[in-house]
Length: 217
Image (tube, rainbow, N blue to C red; front, side, top):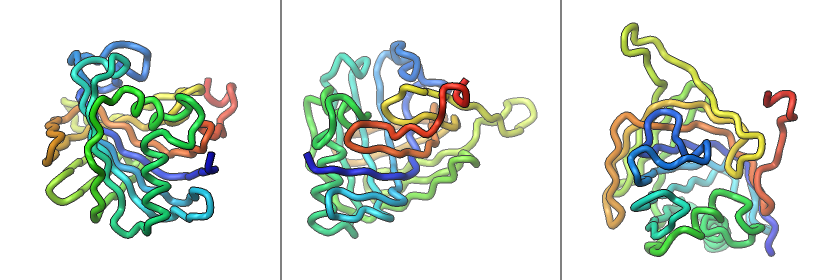
């Protein structure tokens, strides 16, 4: 197993209402799950290959709850990545070189029946976790915009968080709203639904914990 680790920021938009039932071991509120995601790797490595500053994205589509499988997905890798970096990123994203079900990448990969060929492209990502603002753009493939949830009466920003001390993706996520459009073989359209903005710290064995039980309480 090649050792890897990275710290980064993610923006994920899915078809659930604000809160996302999947975060609480419940069924998706639309009966299916469609999701679009982008990640900026602020610092990281896969073996000897540095991953600092690289970006990845993905589109997922499950016809029912994720755990029932039969999903399809498409991965996008920063065109700036060299051969070693591309290989490392794709291995991470497909759940390889990872303890069984230790990361969301490994969990999601186990539920897919169709994985489209990866796309190497320019990926524009801007994520402000605390501000709940973000954008993910891959020309002809992904247009994702995230923002804070706003009070429908006053228009004021509303702040909410999800804390998962034992999560396989993050420990804490800021919750917002987002809309997505995708092109290509995995078509997704989401309007003003659940968005999570999170700082990630992952390695072969899952989330690298920084929060104590008392801090998470």
